[in-house]
Amino acid sequence: VACTVGKFMDVLGFPGIPGRNDSETTCKDCPVGYVANITFDGNETRIMGSCDMCAPGQYLNQTGQSVCKHCHAGLYQKRLGDVACVECPAGWSTGNAPEMAVCIKCAAGRFAESTGWENCTACPKGWYVATTEKQECDECTAGKYTVQDGKTGCSLCSPGFISSTVRWNQACE
Image (tube, rainbow, N blue to C red; front, side, top):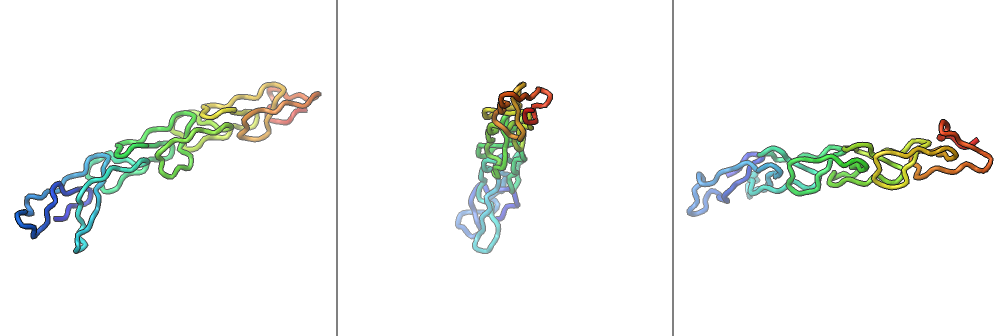
């Protein structure tokens, strides 16, 4: 007995097994969070023998499916057999993680303002973040500056030079 895609055989039974009647074997939908495990008999006939949980970074929110869905960027899912993905918290992102199974802390000099960010953003010139997991950048104060994006602190002006709060993204004059 071959089940259709997305279904599994709840009782193992095959034609020609003594005492088994093919009508006793039924195919059922795999539940949400599970996908049919495809196996083949000796004649290359597809048989769904069991259901497997979707891997971390994947989910399935419908019954009877044959492929788990991958979480989209900014969303993750870390448990086996889950039915939905969730947003990374503010200060975190999925970054370049191919599995989308975890969120990654934003590094110093980078931020994620709200939930569900794919990548942390570098603080612009004149702004900085000294620690990880930040939702926003801090502004350089008067007498300090940055001239590059993604800085973890502001530089002090040399003696005799100033940087106004209006021009904190330029070197001191």
